[in-house]
Image (tube, rainbow, N blue to C red; front, side, top):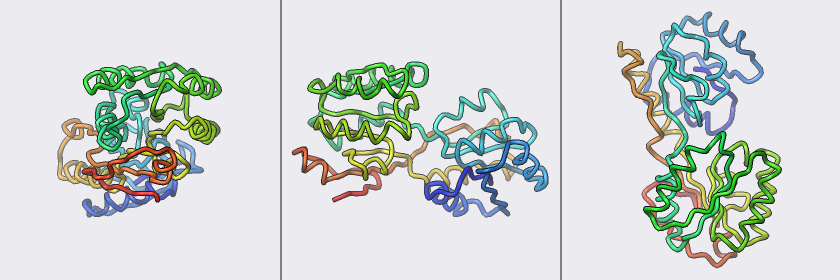
Length: 272
């Protein structure tokens, strides 16, 4: 078990995996290790199966072709694995249609949504979102931002044109340096923010939808049990996360005078 770093979501995913897969596990945290060192560690164990938690861990074993690999907590695994036939797993990206459907349940009054994106990174996702928005009666206003410094200006351009700003995970727009500025700018413009992580709801967004890490661990555990029982990993289909966590900031909703429906079918965390 290769874990990119010791952070709570990854630890929770590991616990979910262990709850279903009872195989003997050696857990290695790969932060601070190079790819060659990581591969040497794997070879010293000689495992029947490699499970990776996080993008960094998966990247460090991408050249291992003779051992089955199951990944989880990775946003865009295809960027790394391409057509590798010894790799499968559970992806974190939530389909755009599903995200907009959950947004509509929680904030049914919102009809004009703005989103910034880098076409090179999330162009296909935005096209999927535009098609879904049309079927739901949502007017999706999209604006390109090819690098983070363009994002604030584009957000200001949306002021008065949208009822909500949607912040999907796009490193061309959202980085460690810009996310707080984006949240602050949206708040100052009285634009609620729908995002991909509960930590940003704690910082001032109104709503987030994210994959449930414990259940992703269980999904990966189910795959591991099949692989260890002799199934060819090529016959184990990669899957998206099946369960989600919704975080709602009622303090922000009340401040902006927005009515929120917190009755969802998912785990829901309320910030008051």
